Length: 106
Image (cartoon, rainbow, N blue to C red; front, side, top):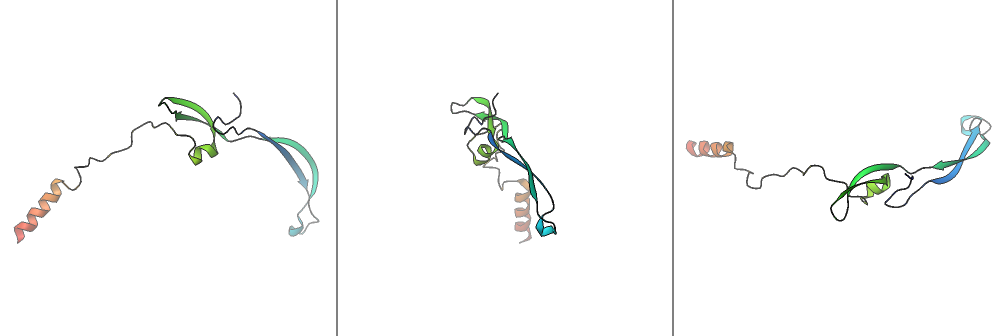
């Protein structure tokens, strides 16, 4: 299993790890000195995500966090979202009772 995003193809990048010693000048020291430079790898933030493919099937994909945030990946919907009954608004029994009491007072 490679460490590559299956959506955008982002993989590992190679850079430097710089080691310093000394006290910074703005803190009253004589300045920091570089004591060593070694190579290191920067890995993408990969997450395993269940996604819905174009034909409606579900698949597990390793996608980077940037692709998940920007919406390049469509996540699987586990439960249907809550839906209100369109005819149920404002037809409760309490509403009818208050109307009849106001009509009786007049």
